[in-house]
Structure formats: structure tokens, C-alpha cells
Image (cartoon, rainbow, N blue to C red; front, side, top):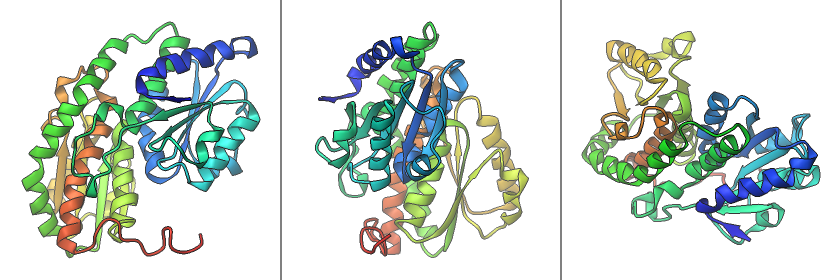
Amino acid sequence: MSYKSPDIKRIITEIIEAKKDKGGVRSLYLVGCGGSLGALYPAKTFMEKESAKIKSAWINSSEFIHSTPKDFGENSIIVLACHKGNTPETIQAAKLGRERGAAVIILTWLEESEIVEFGDYIVLYSFDASPDHLAGNIDYSGEKTLCALYIAVELLAQTEEGYANYDKFYEGAKMITTIICNARNHVADRAKEFAKARKNDRVIYTMGSGASYGAAYMESICIFMEMQWLDSSSIHTGEYFHGPFEITDSNRPFMIQISEGSTRELDERALVFLKKYAKNIEILDAKELGLSVIDASVIDYFNHSLFNNVYPIYNHELAEERKHPLPTRRYMWKVEY
């Protein structure tokens, strides 16, 4: 049976009830590869910050198979993100979950795929499949990142005597589609200027922190490296002053995310330094992009969705200027690996 995000509350209720006589739910594992792993980062951050009882971890699928946590088993929930349901490592991780007696929740875009037979619950998320993801006509509150967050929020609420900001979180989820659509329009001209300025560069760094760090990671590995063949690295703004800032100069380009919420101070500190010693800085500020209408108690967890869905406007323009279409690959799906 397939479920969509409104049913996630019921999914968690069913899992908790099924495991009640076995010691309950004690751990949540968030597992995937590449962009699918990055999309789970806000749920990871939510559990680390908000949960006092449930152990959680964010792990690459292949590493999960080869270095499986000792406690993983019937008291665990494993959430696996697999976009088209055919990533071999993630399929193996789902099989392992089934073998160990964990509750297996699969987040995917395709209802019929290889991985679904190993899931106890299948959550189908919304996805903009238009060229370069430019249509922007989806319900962003139903995308992969938010679906993983719903699982985390419901698990916390149902195992730890409620979640104080539960209603505020769902109020934020209702706002996110409008916020993202407005933000994408807001950066349209800026993205064109960025692409013209950066079309001949060979390196671009991304920077971010907190629950949105996954968006910086995804932009670096999935777009700049995978789809544009540029040298790149995602730099945590809190780590910037502990090594990476030594590469800062007037030539190296940076894209920095300035989050709203608890880690904004980290991002602003890094930006002050960049403005002093670098010249090529593209700033994505969640406050400027309209995220502040979401309540401060939960705003941390919506930065990722905002940034990750604003990036496609930049990515399209950069690909056009570089005459390097985003679907271009050298190795992926073309050779054995």
C-alpha cells in the first residue's frame, strides 16, 4: 500500500503500536545516497535538537550496510530516500532493515520500482520533473525533505509526550510553497548575473550551517560537481575558521546560505570575513527570501527547502551560460561503478 504525507501520522502510530510489546521505538536511521541523503539532513538535525529519548543517525546507504549500527533492529525505524527506487546500495539497506525486523519507510517519487517491495510503508513525495526543475508548480510541502521531517515530528510527538511546537511546525509547512515560489521569482535576475560572472570559473564553494547545511552539500556534489564538472566543496560556516578560510581570496567564488534561526550567527560571521577578503560572493539570505513569516521556534527546519528549491534558478542559468546541460554525464549510468 502507498501513502502520501498526510498519512505519515498514521504510519508512525501503527509502527509504535506494533513495537509496543517489543520494547518500543528506540532509534531512527535516515539512510540514502547523494542528493537523497542530503534531503534527509533537516530531519537529522530536528531529532538531534528536539529528541531526548530516540537515538538517530544520518548515514550513507553503503556505509550503513558495511558498518551497521549495533542497535539496529526491531526497535528501529529506518527511513530510506530513493528517488527512482533503483539505487543498489539503498535497496540493500532496505533489505537489511527487513531482515533485522526494523520498520522500513521508503521515500520515493515512483510508486512502482525495485525498492518498494522491501518497504513496510511507501511515502510518495512531490517532485518537479520539468526540465531543469523550473516549472515550480508542485506542492513543496510534499517534497522529500518535508516528508522526512514529518516522520521525525510525528515520532517525537508520539513518543515524548508531545512536541511543544507541533502546530507551529505544520503552520510553517502550509506556508512553504508560497515562500519558495516568491523566492524563486525574486532571484531570477540575480541568477542570470551570477551565471554570466561564473561561466568560466573552474571552482565554486558552497557554505551553510544548521538544518540547511544539506542544501549546500547537495548543491556542491550534485550540481557543481556532478552536473557541471566543477571543483567544489561544501563548507560548514562554523568550520570555516578552522581551516577552510585559508583558501579565501579575491578570485575564488562562494555561494553562502544565511539561514534564519539558531545558526544564523555562524553564517553572518563567515559572511563578514568573506566580504573583507573575497570578491565573488553570492548570498542566499533566508530573511530576504521571505522565510521569516514562519514562527521562530521551527524556522530552522524550513531553510533547507527554501535554499534547495531556489538553487534550480541559478543552476539553469549557469548551465545555459556554460553550454553544459544539467543532464550531461561522463560516468553516471554510462560505465560500471
